[in-house]
Length: 143
Image (cartoon, rainbow, N blue to C red; front, side):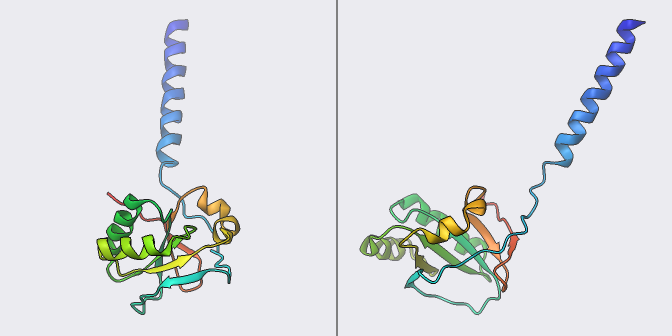
């Protein structure tokens, strides 16, 4: 009898544990307003008149990151793509943009203020979509 009671208890525990894992698996959108400090310099500007944007904070010295920027551009054709980088090598950045044929707005975060003012978000993800009020709209996933 004790064995049956133990297994019933174990079964309920496992079911409740799995239910908790399944119900918490979807990523909630944080209620965060993204802060764009005035110190951001525009390296390249492209606009498609969109009311929202997908923002990607990346290392400008990372060549693979430009491919991610290109993938974002191809995935979200009707949404403006904004890349933000703390890298200061504008010659390398412009070369990479031309090499990969990227038509995104690129901002230079010279003092990393964007990162620090949005640290809570940056620790979660470096790719996110914002609405016209700079509020997180969704967190895109790339395949």
